Length: 71
Image 1 (cartoon, rainbow, N blue to C red):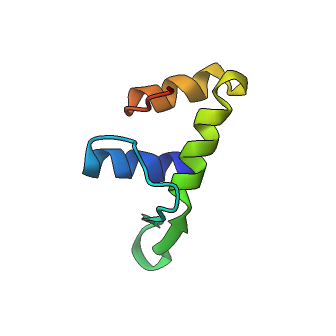
Image 2: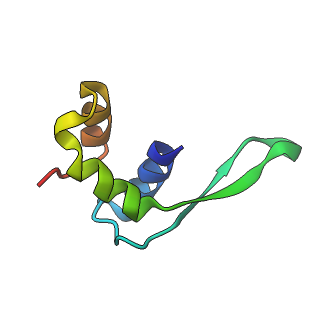
């Protein structure tokens, strides 16, 4: 879910320089099951950057593909 929030932010803003306290709202589900959820995206992005050396290669590639800058 956090990846989807990051992707949504990137598509809207064109970057992943997310303020630490930013909360991203995403809509999940469809029809009557549709819900809006909040994600502490700024904190999550910061955590991903600080843990880059221990992330799975697939996660690094996934985030890099949507504009993550690691340094």
